[in-house]
Length: 245
Image 1 (cartoon, rainbow, N blue to C red):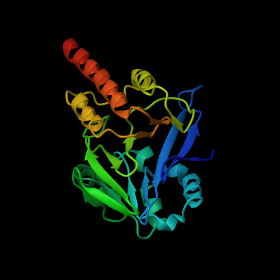
Image 2 (cartoon, one colour):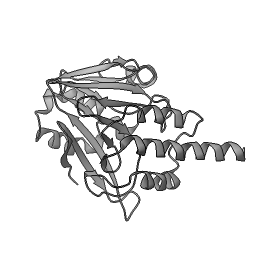
Image 3 (tube, helix red, strand yellow):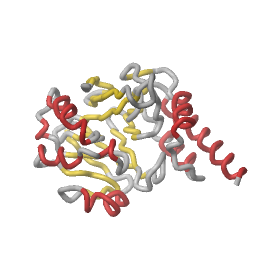
């Protein structure tokens, strides 16, 4: 097992690890994103067992000790399992996450106190790189959920949104909505709630140019339309669930 490295937007690198044992024969990818700048940021730390693989991959791009920020979509093993391992190798690094995530998990679980991000707050990485934090509670799951938007490249770091099976290219212009619907049908991983469509349409309103998926290929193209279509599917699921109640 090793990490495939691809630049999916200017200065944003996707570090992808495929695990064949999950959902065979298609397999499943775990993707982590390094955003370069004077103060680099790693989005998704990876599972603790993947730390040696990801440390080696990051080391091909920058010295790991240069990491300044560590962030992720929500508190879950594949998103932040190796958080403290990264804090140990990067002495200047801080975990950055929303208020709920820090309050319920990170203030206790992180070996150094995290930076609490307010909805809409920006982390400036230098060299024109600015990451805006957006609260997305319960979307797709976890009341602490949030995403990051890199303003210069127009890249939305989506976390578990658009999760899909298989591997494929690092960056695609093909449909990502259909595969995401199929994965939802299989895993039932989302916390269905009446606010899902509205929140996802809010992300569509940003009009990102690239969607960086944690599980599946990153997407370039009409990102707003993809987000609108995903929102429509979740609205239909919620309506069906309420009608059956």
